[in-house]
Amino acid sequence: MNEKQRKAMMEKREELLDKMNNLANQAETETRAFTEEEQTEFDGYEKEVRALNSTLESVDRARDLNKTETRTGEEPKETQEELDIRAFANIIRQRDDSNITKTDNGAVIPSTIINKIIDRVIDISPLFGASERFNIKGKVQIPYVDASNDAVTVAYATEFTDLEAKSTKLLTVELTGYLAGVLCKISKSLLNNTDLDLVNFVIGKMATNIAVFIDGQIIKPTLSQTSPYAPVAVTGLNNIDTTHQVVTAAATGAITMDELISTQNKLKSVFQGNAFWVMSPATWDAIQHLKDGENRYYLNGDVRNGFSGGLLGKPVYTTDQIDNMGAGKYVIYYGDFGQGLASKLVEDSVQVLTEKYATQHALGIVAYVEFDCKIQNQQAIAALKMAAS
Image (tube, rainbow, N blue to C red):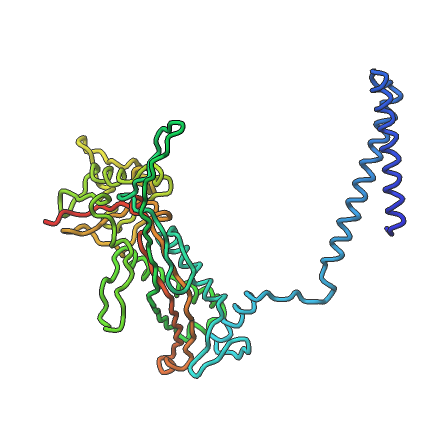
């Protein structure tokens, strides 16, 4: 359809709409309903207008398709992400690819692949994934109000009487950056397997290793390092408010349901919505075996379907990075870690080492990240600690 034909159709539609309006106005002026003849005439005009609208819309859709269609025989262009993934796979399989920066011992991987590794870490680690994350190199300062010294109050006011000024103390949580590295060696026999989705395999392997390390450093950080040049490591959950946010169990090797309830109740209602439990598989196993005075399990379940997977209505995340029950050990954390934890994970570099492990018939992939994590809101996290003795 050319523009002249399209214009004629639009003029025809306007003419029909004018006729419909004239009929409606005449009936409205005379304060009456349509006669049978007028109703038939009106319905006919309406039907024809709808048909014209439908035809014009179809013509417009056809034109849009013609504009966006790829010309016959022309291959669609690859996105930068697709180019990076293909280049990464080629360099791992030791095929030449000019898109990858070469070094004396290997190749530096583009940021697309590094970001995919970090995205996978977020999926694997619920603690890091739930935390408020910052992707900023260098120091990050997060302001918060010191509740214990906050004197600002609301009071009734009287006309012509000044309000009394009160003060509040603003503090900051500072995230720095601690360099961490992970080395993954892959068998060259495995690399020669053409059925293997190599890029996803490497991303998954690296992300799993980084996530395990991050979980361990958030839950039970390394507070000192042997190297005299290395700073003290991340604080993680180690700086929890032991005065107000920690419940101490009565025993060194057993937990009661009352102690779990008290731990959960350390959080105010505003932090309960997204809260979950963190504990070791052995601790979770012990809790699932807790029974009441009638020898019935506290956790509801049945032989066919097992337990619900939750405790006191909240999900349970188990990890080997937290201590099992023992004297003085922190064995359970509970909280809204999205509001309670602040973390940063900045990609530093990922490099494929093609020569270093050649004598082992293997390929090395090394990744470095800059990481830190601290509690930013003490009221959002609670812990259960076993008795000292």
